[in-house]
Amino acid sequence: MEKIPVLRMGPLLLITIQVDMHDKLALQLQDDVTHRITEHGSTGVLIDISSLEIVDSFIGRMLANIAAMSRVLGADTVVVGMQPAVAITLVELGMSLPGVRTALSVEAGMELLLGTVAEDANGTDNERSEA
Amino acid sequence: MNDLAEILAENTESIRKQWIAEMSKGVERADLISKAELEEQSREILDAIVIGVKTSGPTNTGAAGWDAARELLRQISASRARQGFSTIEVATFVLSLKQPVFNQIRTAFKSDQDRTFTAIWAATELLDRLALITTESFMTTREELISRQQQELLELSTPVVKLWDGILALPIIGTLDSSRTQVVMESLLQTVVATNSKYAIIDITGVPTVDTLVAQHLLKTITAARLMGAECIISGVRPQIAQTIVHLGINLEDVTTKAKLSDAFALALDRSGRKVVNKSAAPASSLANLVTKRER
Image 1: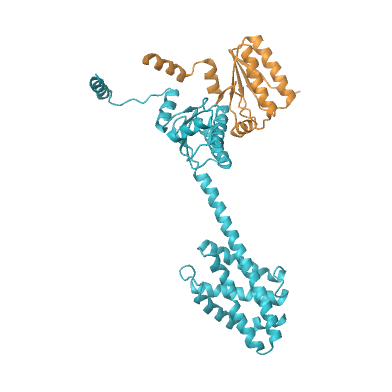
Image 2 (image 1 turned 180 degrees about the vertical axis):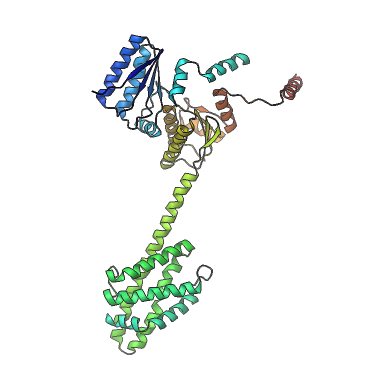
């Protein structure tokens, strides 16, 4: 049976969705992610959906659910690489995924999660110097 | 019925001459079409009409015998639509054929009123039909022209410009309706992906009014951009629009809004960790000192 791989990268978990999601696969992924977070004590989850071209409300809710579950377990979730068509579909479905953080690329998402984003550092520096 | 076919076939050349004369009286547009071209067209059409009347009869303009004539009229009216003729001028082109044909019928039958009447009636019916075909294809061409221009306008009016590495601007001009929002949203999101931009400034200086529907469209676009990992800033909110937004109770609290595009650009630069500095720092600071001194 096909399965979506959950890769461990240091303190992060990297999930790349490259197949068409069906409901069973989505539920299995939720199960896997929660288990891996507790197992490794991960602090961040990166979900790359750049190859995902079709979404429905179930997949949208699944993304929101994974984010919420990870937060309960103490890990931040970033969804990266959403295609324009997918974004438009989700908005038209009325799913704005309010609790989910997003980034343009895996790289940007990783920076966001590791908290080493240059702009953030600069931003706080600026604020300090102004104060 | 065959009377008409005979008259047309026998007197084609004199009918054509009278027709040209008739057209030159009323609707000839020497500025739009040359005399030679007009003569060529009238010859072709008359020949096609003669063939049509002979093979399929004058009333049955939908039949196969009329294919050539119909196609020819379509082509001519389509080209006239593009050249800038008015509807009346195009319709009169065919209708001015009536008098020459009637004249020929009168000379042919002289005192035989019955035959004259039958032939004239057949000719009227035929020419009216042909005129309707011409007008219809003229309108079709016009409509195609209009819809193509609309499409072009739609594409032209939604340019996405790159202001800086990772910062896009989308100046919206004109009212935002559903179809336009779709185009705006798609082109913005495509460009976000293509240029890997984290910030997008939506400038609504050129939007005349913002009602709940426009605001909803804007929010949709912003949400879609956020889902992809880009952040939107709305700029160009005019005082009038700010008042309307508050009076309508539109919730824009989750969205960053700025009065001017420059403010939004400065914010985007700041958020992406950039800073605009004056090249000659010393004069700038002395100027600042001057200002503070004056204030004191």
